[in-house]
Amino acid sequence: MIAIYARVSTEDQAKKGYSISDQVRQAKQKAQSHEVKTYIDDGFSGEFLDRPALSRLRQDVKEGMIHKVVCYDPDRLSRKLMNQLIITDEWERKGVDIVFVSGEYAKTPEGQLFYSMRGAISEFEKAKINERMSRGRREKAKQGKIVRDYQVYGYGYDKETCQFYIIEEEAEIVRLIFDLFTTPNDIAKGINGIATYLTERKVPTKKGRGVWHRQVVRQILMNQTYTGLFYQNKWNTEGMLGNKHLAQDEKVSVKLRPKHEWIDIAVPVIVDEMTFEYAQKKLSEAKRRHAKQSKHKYLLSGIVRCGKCHNTMTGRKAKNWNTYIFEYSDVKSTSGAKCKGCGKRIKCEVLDDLVWKKVHDWLNQPDKIAAASENESTSHTFEEGEIARITKQLEQVRSGRKKLLHLFAKGGADISEEEMKGMLADLKEEEEELTAKLEKYQMTKHLKSTEHNKKTMKQALEYYMSTGKEGVAFEIKYELIRLVIREVKVFDDTIEIYSF
Image 1 (cartoon, one colour):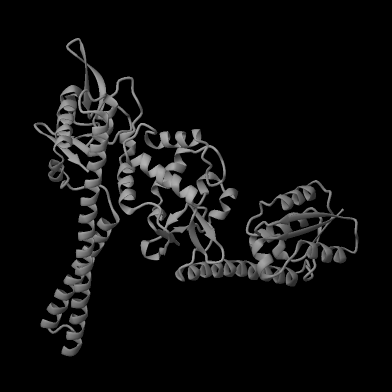
Image 2 (image 1 turned 180 degrees about the vertical axis):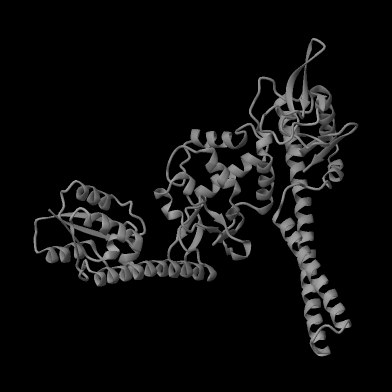
């Protein structure tokens, strides 16, 4: 039986005009027979051997069903020289004749050399195609265009302008997700609760499915695109295309590129920046905030930490002189715990009363929250990152000026006085620019923090007033504490309470 193998991928259709029908037609002419069996891989990359039709052909050759294989060109078998040699060697050992339409394949030293050279050229061409496509996408992004439809929930993609536009029905769901996550409510608690709520309401996902998973909700909450800034060239996915052909321990993982390589594109705003940053703060605490429910509910579960060893202090039932009590303890019994804790313990009722009294006091006298809000936040905002980066640059510039002056004073610098003045002027100008940027980011950080504190207290007060001040239920206390308080630290002789 004569076999005809044909393959085409999207890039081949676009770049070379290959077509399956043309390959098969020319292969039949070369075979000089219509009694053939065709093996066609339509839309498969030639970079890997794991292709449906090629795998069937190799199996049929192995079973002795095929005595001749006709293919349009060696690069249809594979785009990699090593893979081409593996296939041809495998078939030759079975006595199969290999024929190419685009050139003769001779089993001579010269023929083998020519075949290897063509394979190497094909592999080089594949690498160049990938490089050109990547460069083209980067250039397109630098022109302010979004290179493809990334399927971001809340946005549609206009192929004509290469820009995102808001799909209002989806955008409303995005805003709802942020509202449910950042505002106390009786509708949905946490990410799991939001996912369940959307599923019960039969809200369709981006792919039109009716089930929302917690990870999808989390991804929406973490997506900075909704604030009006979409990043391209952010992730390096080189080599990931072949993951399905590799063992688990050999798979290539996605890597984050350095920030200076990211290309930002302005897109329509769905969520304001202050709400987004507040959501990030809550997400950073989510693991501790929404800890697994135990039989006994602890009012401060997930937000208490030992001030000495910094272990989280979890609620537990302990025996004390034949009497069971509930307490918060930093002791970790897990075998893999990095720190076993320093043995700090405090009765739940004592700490709960102290913290609730403080929150109750704040809610009845909102101006007192301002002083507590001055405590340094542990979350890493964009402004904080820029402040740290610019501060480091300023230190380097100032250090450079001192070294330059010292070197010139010692006579060790082979430069003229005019050149020295020019270099110092440049460094001074750079220092002034960096100082201005630093002041801008510091002011922005302060304003955002102030606005956020006002919004937090407003939400807490509205929730507090709507539930009534007397006889506040455990669940309401639980929510109010987590809206106002970021962390509680227990020291040997003091308790420190940190607000947002």
